[in-house]
Length: 336
Image 1 (cartoon, rainbow, N blue to C red):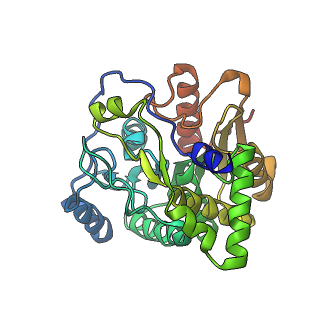
Image 2 (tube, rainbow, N blue to C red; image 1 turned 90 degrees about the vertical axis):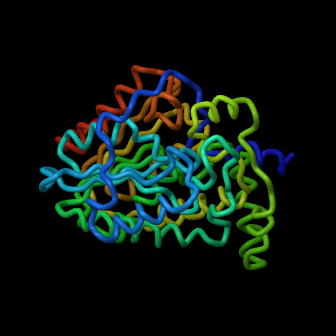
């Protein structure tokens, strides 16, 4: 039973695609690599030389001149992709930001329409590499000039929290449903057991998870393939464990964060536990310094709430979009 619970409930950062309306074209075409500064250009060109799924490649929307509002990092969820910013990226570019949507480390390999390659996702013992990734993205974004703001969801939010802990100069942040601990009690217990084994043996527990298959299942896979942007459906439980360990470490250093922050969470989240998100809010300074918007459980707002293919509720999608825009552009708080 415990093994089944691990496999069933360790999934997070994006629920399966639930809507399949026709895909609108990007309102603004991403900036070509040749027009980017050196670090960003190298990253975009390196990705172009690999077999990255369509919708998982890093994207940059840069202004021809100086961006009025500086630079903005958009960080996608773990099993989704940069496609989560198809609408938000161009919108925030129009609002005056140079926008950078990186690809999470090891993510997105495998040609579109084929089985994804999860072999490069970080393993259980490699979770500190997320910190290296956060630092790399910060340095790439710094080349764009101006103040840096950030927005991320779930596992991507964890990366940005680590970045803020190291770089107090980041101007503003919106973090949506950061993953600090699994919501399901069985999964939380299972993780605690594995961590205990790791403490005693060094890394045996995590290594065991590295060999354990995990899959979203077959229900939505054909439609995701037809869309051409599946993200990751198959991986190892150790990949998920790595990001969870990283989330815990980020929560442990939250007092170091000085960036003004808007947090968004939902009571109907079937992935991320609510308690640690509220603990994050308290550790960074609480309501005196940071805004917190909470969708009550009865509104049934899903964990991956920022894109219409994952959040079929147009009302909550519009609310989340306005929270992101309002806080990043105007500094407007949203509390509930």
